[in-house]
Length: 493
Image 1 (cartoon, rainbow, N blue to C red):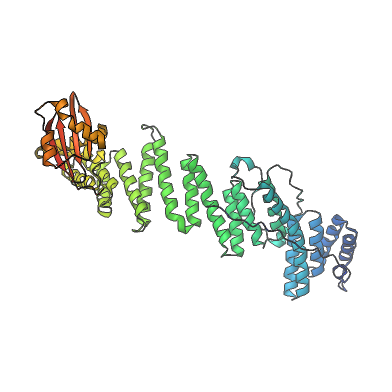
Image 2 (tube, helix red, strand yellow):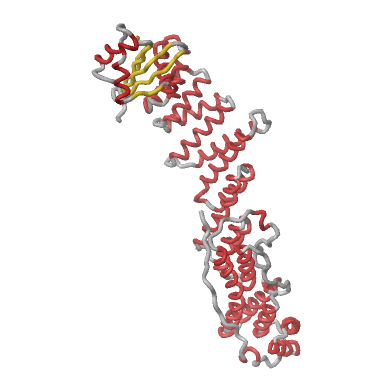
């Protein structure tokens, strides 16, 4: 998910005309008059000092705030400048002085535009860049929400020009200053949330996005930036295999992005599991990590809709694997039964459920689900393996057990012959096996050649399995004699 930004320049003309500077209230004091004179002379520090004095004497003087905002802006005291314009607009609004409101906003925009456009220029020079490592900007100031105008007007911090080398930092710096002049600029917050995300500053990016959303709750760009910032750091930690550090970040992401909540919960569960598997088998914290992963996947299942098939199937599968890795077969079986009931056509679920039941000594139960797995994919060796193992534990199933063992060995270890090579192999039976072999009889009874022959060895014996996939039948020969036969659902291809 990529954040979005605004790269348009802003424009405004500073109003320093006679209508602002000459027409003074009849009750204007010495401080205000002196401040105006210093403004005309562009002696900004003395103008600010006198106008600050006048503010205490004439708190309702609208012109005073416009001039004070200008003086502070020229001194690069941007927090105070923005606050002066804001208070002036508040006073003019109460008095319903529309013209003066417009003049104040125009002057405010003039200073904000200077800074905003410097940010745009730096961002343009940065071009398309990858996110910078978090450590590259640890000393760079973070985002602070706008202070109240009454508090900010006394903040006379001077902000000099940016002196670093990073164009992303430079753009961030100037947009941050622009937001001090005009805390109501939504575009500024869009860009800040975007740039802080590039700097790897997820908390700052989210704070900037939230500040913008407080002004424009339905702004999709800001909403997207908030989501991207929330999950961006989590994903970077996850990709860097810092799984435990990623967990709280995914939780933060779930708080701000309800639509992606399930995905983040899945990543939390995965983080615990990957952390566990990265540890040595005997590490004391490994069991706790596996338990945390199982609990996280169970929590995910509770919230995942029944139509989210892939996520539910994956969660079931992982819970069963986790319990199996801990030899907690009693805990795994109820989960496996639920998974089989919900996904009766999932070969992976059925195969895993069969393995769990085998390890729990439930051989009849294992045979039932493993046969279902084989029916779905008779070419997968693993279900045949555990079907053989399960059948071998049942005294009345030895013939089936031998057949499944043969299939398992053929599929897992056998060399395959098809097409012309298969025909040549079958036709050479007399030369290979002598006159008493049973291959020709099978060739006749089955009405032709199999689709595949797999040749394998068991101890010092050579065996071959003939797979009639389209008929759903396999015949295994040991040194030319029929050893076993088995059937399965015919393959459609």
